[in-house]
Amino acid sequence: MSQYRVTRAQMRQLSRGVRRAGRAVQRLKSSHTDLPLSIVPHTVCDLQITGRPAEPQPRPRLMGRRVVSVPSGSPIALWKARVKAEARLAMGPRPPTLEPVEVLMVFGLVEARGDLDNYIIGTLNALTGIVYQDDRQVRKLAAEIIPVNLEPCTIITVRVPGTRP
Image (cartoon, rainbow, N blue to C red):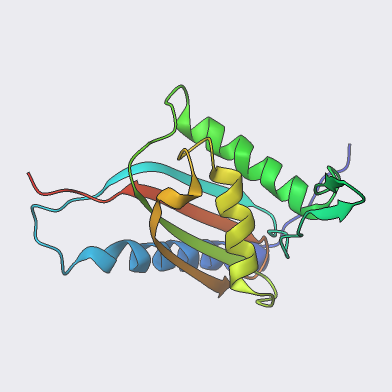
């Protein structure tokens, strides 16, 4: 078994990237500061997934009279499987919520390239049926790509907006 050696400089870079991602999540979460105190959202689940998200979201193809879906070994299928596994762990035995939700996403990428909407679509589709019943329940979406130094990661928060008592 080989051992990986990480220098102090690499650890500092990693901790800076994690702090930067945490600050981005706090910025997105604080977007409700203009709401009255009687409207308080509650969190359905928080996820942190390491690794680069796959893009783009491929379209199902029509081959003759049958629809061929995304191959199981494709990068998007592997990304969705990781998101689903993390979502199942975070949700535990709770069923998917049936209420409207808002989703906050921060994609920490080493190379900040790619279309943000392609990252979002694959991730939202992976959460369907686990965190919320249907992606039509997403009423508000905030997403951001931030640069990180070492390990790409994605932070997702799904919450139900508060209602007036």
